[in-house]
Image (cartoon, rainbow, N blue to C red; front, top):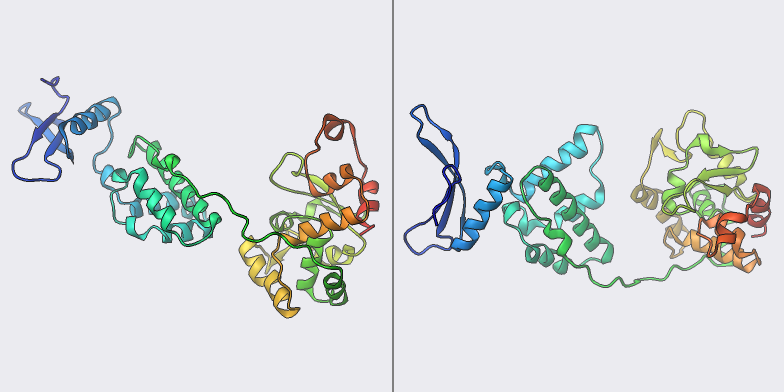
Length: 338
């Protein structure tokens, strides 16, 4: 089959080669009008070589970029997305990249679904880590596609293992809460109690801005994830009011900061939560505070509508979602029952 002028060429190299078919493209012409060729790549079959040439002519790209390794793509992406914007590369992506060492030096454009799936399957960590690896692959593919380095996102075809609950969240017992309240002069203990008596997720607490804390009215605005959970009114129970008041600093943007800087979940867990668990010989995860609040509200007989308002859960029907408006006082009365 004769290809159009300037379209490129496919030819077979001599010898016993794993990829014997070479694809060349037109890179320009010299002063004498002679065509200048540039190698696009090498392929195991003529069919694949012709397909590569068709794809190139449909959407021309820089062949040199196609040779970028996974590490080069990762470095370029992180620099443009995070470092150039004075942002820290998220820890979960740094860790995910670390599990891909066998692919670091391989050409990113040559990677296929099987290569990515092998990394996910070989990871000896839990579901969340494997999910982060898949998310990182997706981010890198989207960047590479946007810059014409690849034409297809193979990360979308990978599969995660079934999500298994490795540990059910366990609410704090009444005895444990009493012990924490007895030691509530400890600033770290206070942060644990705030989660137990607001039902906030740890990340929700860390994102509470000082301007959204209304001490006089005894509520805060915050929340993430769902529509019902975002920017919800979170009542400040009497038991934790002194802790919130002590954290309220007009010089800080966020309610919880370290040396004037906001903190992330990992730092909260290592610097606040785990020292308390170690000191008092307790075995709880940070999200157990939210489950504790839900259990306490249920044990106190708080009705489902108010409980959902406090925790930021969606109502099951139109009446709960739209027509039931609970005042801050009702939320405060409920939270003070626990």
